[in-house]
Image (tube, rainbow, N blue to C red; front, side):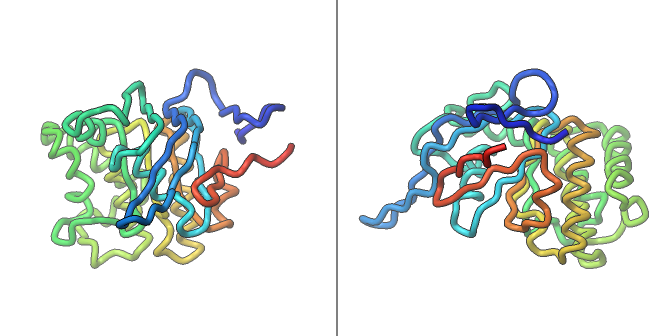
Length: 244
């Protein structure tokens, strides 16, 4: 179901219930000596369970900064982020580590796979960190590799896989601990257009089947149509939604 826009321009997400992610008045400033660069200014939005949101904008518009703040990888200079009831912007680092382990899954442009480990071993890393029992871990890894279409490649290492296959492994790894939020920063940036679209379609299918929320930063206009909603950043601020 596509995103609806109310008469006053606010977004109404598909599905029922409250938002999984709430961002209110977010601001981030980078300082180099006396120079200041405002990366985000007064950014606010909500994201709901089962919703895939594409965050669009030119390079330098603030997409990565926004995702890093929502995912608790960086601290803002103002504003608040709440994920699954957790006040991300106020939490100590130890609590953020647990949040990133248990609630948020990350997918990066560079894949981030461990080269000496097989596909199955890469997917199982979060489960090992969570000390999941071996039998349960192996069952979950097998299911996830099947979900992303790589059940026959479980024992191959990253260098034996194509770029698209490596990103599928990264998607499976991000889902290992059953996160409620997926944060994907340009996940198709290193892939050709056809493979990139396949990865975006996979993410959309995962959102539906797993009931998670996904924030996906992308500059590829061909992928935007696969999202439930598009938020466009321009110089650190969201552009208003188009008039219906």
